[in-house]
Length: 103
Image (cartoon, rainbow, N blue to C red; front, top):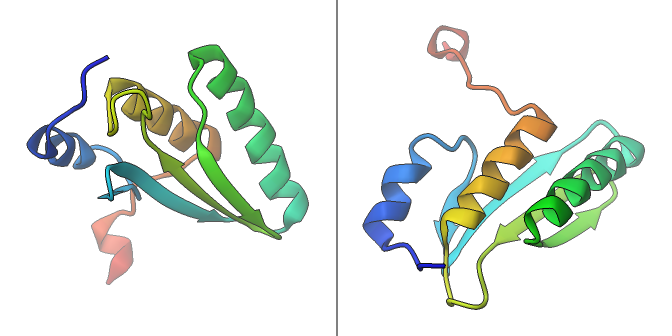
């Protein structure tokens, strides 16, 4: 697995809603309606993690979930981190905000 360059990461982040690159990792956080919904999402994410054999660093406090993705074997972000981040966004149903709705 090849560690991606900062430029490669920044180019890919454009397509990955609500994720940032910080300290050699992709990071995001989610807020759910309640603890049960948060745990449900974490369980669904866990199945995807097992399927990819790639596991996040994450923190859950009540209805919030913070996720950090990095590939420790290479000391940074790889394609696998982007695959998992994309899958997480689908699981959590992250949607693009319509620019008209922001105004």
